[in-house]
Length: 398
Image (spheres, rainbow, N blue to C red):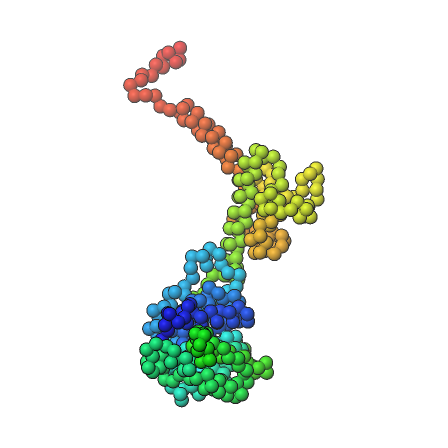
């Protein structure tokens, strides 16, 4: 039960934002949300994933997962601008009281408003599975604070008809500290949803425990490899495009390079009708001092940093293209850029392999006009006589 007049933003959003801030500060790579239900937290994390590479949701309700799974699919922007890091999202049907070997080795496990849906006898099994078997590096558990309930208008019992219990702060912390002693964790307590000023003494509406595993407790997967699930049932899986995929990386890099090279070529053709100009500093706003550090100055022009013509081709030096921050982020140095372009048939380099060769459309158009004129002259010479005209061979032969 959440009352809009009491909480802004809504309480569930505050809980999710708490997890996002934890992810931002701790940078976990593998995250699992137990009791993911409508997948709202997973959707939030896919947009604020920071270092997350594996995002897993588990819930006993198969229908709830299937209904919301589509919201985790990649967007068009994920294909146009792939992330530097991989991301795999998986959704499973399973119980939090069952041991699943696949769940070992995670950096963070979240249980947001889940534990109160278990019977009290199941809580002990839950504790053993999460802290004793899965042993993640960190666990975030949120649950209603029963002391806050009198402040919720119209509430006569538990906040949800499926809740089996609701703990006070003392009860929650007693359970949590017992788990810490038994399984080698430490815990900090906080919450979201502050009470109005006169009632601050009741604590937060949702109490939160943040558990961190002691360094001497291992959470490595069995056989030190990521296993296929044997107990949980996979319902949905999607692998996001990323620059870790060599094919995607090559496609993005070549697209960026050709876009940059074409832009420099077009500007060169417009500017002074082909007069050699230093475009690296003007187009990208690089200080002239930085440009001169790349090559040697000769007659006021930095050698190797000018667009030039070679026959019917316009040559754009790789140094000019590499001045693009996006290209630099993809390649790191000019040598990697050169090697990547050598292996791609969509890019033509000059003999020295230090410039990209692009066709000059103006030259091509002129050649096309010449060919067109020659074709028309040939067609005129071969054109047949009009209907009705008589051949005068005697005159022609004299």
